[in-house]
Image (cartoon, rainbow, N blue to C red; front, side, top):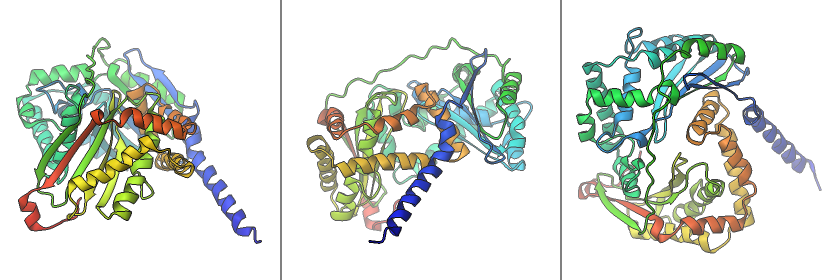
Length: 453
């Protein structure tokens, strides 16, 4: 028997394990350094001298969940105001300076936090820190900037919701799933609310949330930790803050019955989403839920994909995920159906696979494959500076622990087949279920099927 192929496979496996561990080892250890400033700003830094680059990310602990009724869209307006210039650097100067230095920048508004990111050569680190400190300190509010910010918020909604084939079903899924919690507002605000926001509304909201006591600065890359901490103290340490801001926590009532909604759109391919309420990202059930989502709908080997796409040919795309949120979120699966598949048939097929998780143990190979896939995706995705900085900043913001996801990966290794059945039975109940259909309109059907974007 020729052992060479087997030996080669073992060597390749060991090499891949070694490669995947390299970029993660520093992050997973205690080499992330935390520095707390007197005004409430937190600095999290991680040196990585593998390339002369640095990722600088500022997280404000504010997202669309902080928008009260009648004020939806406010966080995106504040995001635009932050990008709209200061007395020292007018609109567009921030981006121009970073791009001229060979870097890139972007911003993001989520359910729980707002992120400002720049990736630059390490020689530009002090410049970016100065620019971030300037706009944390010196934002000016004018009627013109508010009007332009409202216009930007409307355009974002137009692009991501109103002009998107599947934008409305995404928004309606949030609206239907959450009756009380602001997660139900979606991410882009409602037009009447955006129109009604006043300068007083803007200044009050901005002053509450876009200030040092609600901010985390994350720096990953080629720098010296002591010098960075000294520079951050110098630039950010005297920025006024409001550490006494109290945020009322809104608890979503327990869902007591199945929720269904039908909507019509101009998509010619029917789509539906099935979702269930789950706990917050720090909950002890989260490692098992991540594995359940992987087994059900992550990739071509997942149960729903094999059932609906490979075998039944009822769907062309099947996917799903988990909202890893600061407060209780959702686990969901969705399917884009073949145009001749009735939505109830597709729903029944997906539901069969969900119910089967509650009633039959998964196989040993399925569970091991899910664990391996979860870890491989994790190591593969978070190899870059931006990704590791995001890992640190996001999980610290929503869970208070920059090692939260790494710890979930470790705990997932001890999840058993019995745990999977127990957790599935706990959350995949009919009374906890939300289903939304997007049925093609007559106009879309006349135009024939088209590929989803």
